[in-house]
Image (cartoon, rainbow, N blue to C red):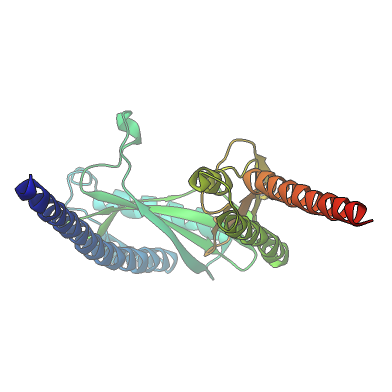
Length: 284
């Protein structure tokens, strides 16, 4: 029995050490992956802007150098035909947008789907970049070959939105910030209280923030009845016009426990007043 008792802490310590080593390994792999991903994002962003600027300058020979013409997807394409296609795309684009553009990186992605047509081809990355001409904003997508880091395909999406004023966007964000502040305050009140099973109250406050109210810089106000915002009731993205938004949920969990705690406090206050009155009557 004594030997078993002595072995038990040793086993627990060994298990904890294995868990720590596992978590440390995950952390190191995540950091290395993040560094690699950041490097690729920077490369793809620069190459995307370089290709579009080269296209707008009608330097089609350089465009061909920036394209992965040795890739299997491009082997059957005639170079002269490709140049004619690029010239057509360029002229149509310039007619609508001009040539004085600013760029803002959106994302890189690899699509995996049970529907084959929705997948990105093997060893390729799809890059989305927002651009604007100081009046309107749009998006183009470039498919890159991962091996050569060269362009396989470019597509200008059918999106043209006026550049929005950001005043209302930031005002809405100022309002949204009050939701997590309120939820943190309620969590603090629950912690100070004598409630039992406090963890279940914390979960209610953190997760029960519905419906969600969203303000997009471009599309304005919208409502989503069943969207759950787990970051204490708020979500946001800031970086470019088309993807910038603030979203906050109505803090139903926080409001419920605010009411419950307030009612409990009122009941205690009422009970104390009644007790004081009884004492005064007895003294008389």
